[in-house]
Image (cartoon, rainbow over all chains, first blue to last red; front, side):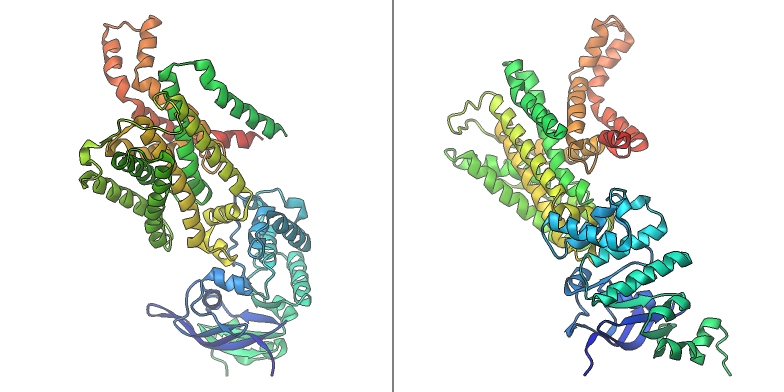
Length: 242
Length: 332
């Protein structure tokens, strides 16, 4: 049997009468790069929030590493080895770049020295070593995205949930970040990847789930997804596919 | 190295200061107030400045220390005051946990609001209980500790200095430790902090407990020093506000900001309260004592220190949002 690291089973999330996510199920295997795509408002970020404990799912189960994690707080989910980045980046603005990454590193050590060494290693990986002493709030958006990535890497996660980590970046920056992400997978981490940019997703993902209006529209390899008429309709609009 | 030399110099000056002043109880009294406010504001700063959780009710912990110590000494007057100080810490910690364990589950301004509410509950309870002396307060006639001359002010000067030094040492250590970084992460962005594995309510409670315990020790010392306490002296909302203003004007979330704030504000309040400014103007011949302005100053300036605090705070928020030390930081 294949080892599922993350299993989402019939997850729904309602906000009052609004259904943001409706009965979504899928599984992510170890060392996969898994894409979660869909138009604006499809429920991708909401699903991330349900998985990482920011708000509990209304129905359904989230199983991570053979443990049910529905009712856990975000910090407990992080301690289990699953960590997320934010679509709207959340740097700790008045701390330095190094200190930002150290905060991530402290989840696996109590020693300031070890946290600093770990943080420097991650900053090297994403190419931010020139900025260690700069305050995080002063970085431009592209570098803030890299900082988000370095900070979660410092927690030595088994699984990373990346929420539009390439959003707002130009092609060169995107390619650089995708290379870093491939490198992370090589080291043994599993990645779930929310992205708008179909090109970025299809070039890097092993498997993709498409959400539309909170429901799962399709699942498959990048080739299957790009040739799926439902997906094309959802992306190109219309919806009246013949 | 420059820092260590500077800190050593400041410490040596503070230790030697009473020797130069001799037995001038008025000046020593003001210095004790400066040290106490510096320590109170530094203790508040651990929670308010580093963790970003503004408490508007620190008088509750100060009062808990003062009342616990004086009640115990009234009941058993041979007791070692150190034991009373320790019991005071326990009482203050219980009040802190009562507030924190409930309110820190919530985000936003709930803690600030709840801290005022709890402080008022403590104040009104003390006002209405029998054992606390109610509105009359508690008067302590005689205390002794290790053969020290506690009628002199000098032991209390050194007591306050010691607590201030301990508070600053704890803050300096925390800043470079996991807990300190976690508190600052919570201040900066709670969602980001939680997603990186930080148990928000645990660390907020930890900061609150450290802060409350130190504040309670200062309350105990103050009670032993003054030997008369009532709710308006140790449990008033005004005290909580003064603690916050001292930190804000000096520099919130900096190690030395609260100390700078206290060195500036406490003597200023004293000058206004004792009408030294009015007298100086008369002496300098700028204002005649019998003129309208002279009489006005004499009658009103003494009450003006709260107004002056207010004006300084507004100016600080407008022009020095990071406090006086923030200005120094920016120049670096």
